[in-house]
Amino acid sequence: MLHLPQFIGVFLIATISFYGGIWLGMRMAGSEAAPSSSSSSLRADTHREAAATEEFGREEFEKRVEAEVTKRLAAAAAANSPVDGDIGQNNNDNNDIDKLYSDKSKQPRRFPSSIKSFATGAAIVSKRDFLTRFDYGIPMPPSKREGESDPGKDDVLLLYGSDRALPDDHPTSPVYHDHRHAAAADGSPLPHLSAAAATANCSGLNVIFTDNHGDVHQCTAIVGNYESYHIQRWLRMNPSKGYSKLDPHLPLHPVGRGLQTNGQDKFSAPEDKYAFQNQELLITYFERLEGTLAELRPLARECAGGDNTVVVMVCNTGQSDLLVNFICSAEARGFGDVVREKVLVFATDQGVYDIATGLGLRAFYDEKIFEQMPEKEAGMYGDKSFTAMMWSKVVTVQLVNRLGHDVLFQDVDLVWYKNPLEFFHDKTNPLHDFDILFQDDGARSLRYAPYSANTGFYYVRNNDKTKFLFRSLLYLGDMVLSMTSHQQALGALLDEHSSLTGLRVKTLSGLDFPGGYHYHRKKEIEPMRDIVEGRHVPYIFHMSWTTNKKNKLLFLKQMGLWYTNTLCENGGGVGAAKISKEESTMESSCCSAEPLVSCHYSDKPSVKECKDSPKARSIDAKGKPFWK
Image (cartoon, rainbow, N blue to C red; front, side, top):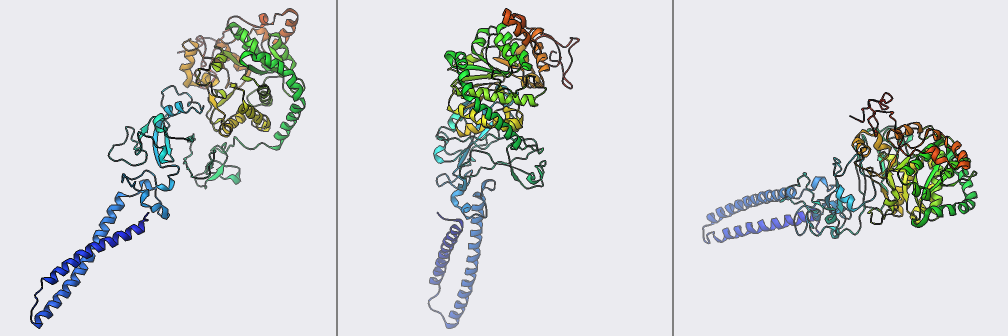
């Protein structure tokens, strides 16, 4: 293979030889035409003229050669110039002629051969088409509907790392610039292919999800090297100063994935105090493990039944009215028998154990294991009571999963519209092959990337991958404690385990499994209106994204999802449970057959118009009435 300097040398020699031959021939022809007999003076004149002619011819020849060489080199440089500066000037390898031309087509390549091991060609594929064919489980952008555009992110850039990976129907257009054809309708010179056609010959496919965040002027580098399954992140911040805000004058520094541009790190390593707390919790866990499993095993087996699924709920007395409401709403909506058969309540105190058993549910309570769990509800998201309950939710799912059962975990602030178990058990469902499926939380911040998994409603299929996942989460209790929630810790593990073990994770549609995000965000008004007016029936509604229990009750009441009598609100179920032991009347005392609807906030979704109610008011700043 000729390098550029060698090519130029050969070119010059050939050109000089060509014109030299012409000049020499002309000179010889002129010599043959000269007179053969002349006087001495005439011969002298002839010699002088010949010498002058020879000198003139040499100068003229050199000028012509120089001009022709310059002309041809300029033309070659113009025709073969690298695309967008792809070929560096300080690398001899980058000067190879085959970086510019295909031996067959003589068309300029899109990429130099110095990166052909991972970018020999490229194509564009619709993101919707691509993610439909290769469903990695990530959620749609929040508030995006079927077919709705996501500007700047509607397509996928596909790079080919081998000639053999190129599509059969388009073997050259991903590789070469084809100026005979105008750019695509969207202005892209790359071929726009279907996901099926574009990947028909790909025997392997590495998928990278990326986005720009806030004011980060982001660049993405793909390095051909020993392969990594993580993205290495760099920001213009100063690590020595505790990660100050983004500063364009600083050099790029390697940072963790949770570092935000405002300097807050959402994935800082837990301090020792959290490790010591988790150590104490784990000591209790392992000391009590065999006895716990022996007591739990028959309860879980009874709940699992023929489909091997246990519905796990965790509750304390402070949240007991929400547990009561779930049971009462299930009874009123025709799911009472299913719930009593499938639900296993992990009671973190004696009071809620009495309530659960009084309502006819199976319940587990171990005073030693849950002695550090609070009886009162959390005052707000992330406080100590909330964090303690999050740890208990990790343990309970891990125990039932360890026993060999599928688990539907759900928080108590939830109501069924349809039986969700039918969705997860349907073998014709395209999502049946996923190992773990989550409600879409709605948040798209760095701390919940990439699945935005809501840990208040999710389904776990029992296998070695999910067992490993929840064992890992159990041992990461210090991370749960330091981050005040298992949602963030579990979200990080989902990303890691999907890469490490091939765990298949899916974020469910927000239309069929809505929650607090959909309730509180104005962009979701129309889907919520479809629900309250009966045009769309989801599987569940989860009253998440709400700061405290007081507001949860008010929102559920005006949504027509509250079925609990006043007697059993605010922990009143404990007293009702004591009476029921004697009279078996707890359900009749606590449950209403019809929803108990009342208006509280005009700017929140409701089953009836609350805008004219004297009690209704806006809870959000500049809140607009839900009903027009």
